Image 1 (cartoon, rainbow, N blue to C red):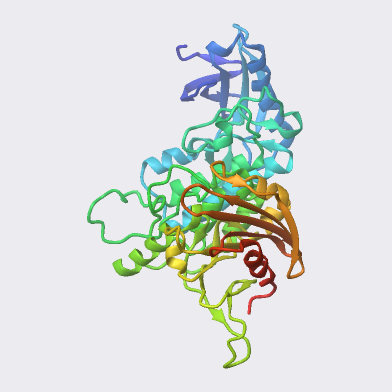
Image 2 (image 1 turned 120 degrees about the vertical axis):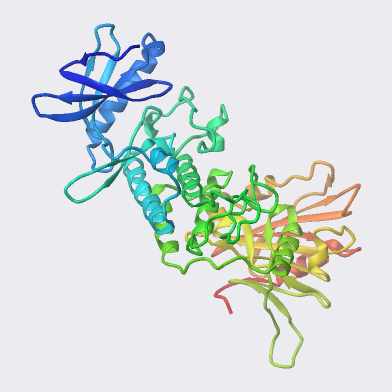
Length: 473
């Protein structure tokens, strides 16, 4: 399509951009002496009635919401060839894609901008709408009497949640699209947009020169999702120096592979981001030795579940070793004789503030347990977020051991908690693996136990009886 002289009452000045579904032109309203953006359905989609209706749905949706954080619609029309068009407010400040092409934004400005983008997406979520394609090109800027304002644009892939169906297009932009959008049977909801916000945050805050050898200063890494993903070995993109210390955890949770592990919507993401932004800037890189110790602990994580760190081990009365306990936040476990504990967080499980939920490893040698099948031990975790999603039986059903022979599932009440216990006899590696889960008032308790040889049921019950939850000591 060549440049048209006019579209409706508007004289066309130039092309603003093209996409898979539409072309956008800059038009001039001679009567009001103002500029508008005119979005025209692409020719190759003009005969698809479903796409035509979705195109018009977008215009109707934006007109109905009529919010200052969303692109406003002035009207709709139809070209002589029958293609519909929408007349939109012109964002004279361009797009975030344009700005990033000129170089990275200062860290404080980037964090503030990300929070404002989340505010715009939260408007959609409050009205039951999922954007589905949050990218730098769909974040626009417009000037006004109160200064520049951020606008969320291009809802061509958005759809009211109440109208979602199996026919919903699971399209998006690679790099920003949530994993479930590429799954023909995946459920796409507000958490898909949370993933997109997290990826925008990584784009805004990542060190653009992280691949440059010899760069003198670097900020914190954004670890790859514990539940899977394509992050590089040992961590995800490295963030710039000066990023507030709590922001990496917010972005990590937002970009978790499993929707249940993310913030529920854009408002929750924005609130967590603003809380994290009040923290002090992240420190410079740690020494090589300290980094090596951290990497070693991460490699020892059990099935990607645990991020290791030093941990206090408490005893009973002073000088009385009758009950040594390992603790991680509100979670403590009585230690069998000769056992120790390590651990502070359950990777992939986050609380409402974006912090890892508590977990620990107990073993005669906690550092060797995850990699040496001859060493007994246990992973114990506490998750309030998981308790909102499923119960003990459902959680254990997600953890089968296909190569092992399952013993009959049993129930036992230990330490005031009703536990479901499933034991497996395995032909290789650890001979016995026991999975247990129970519901405490503060969340779901989970234990994976590799007991010492002989009488595993009695040992497991004794270990479970020593699990306690409550305020941190």
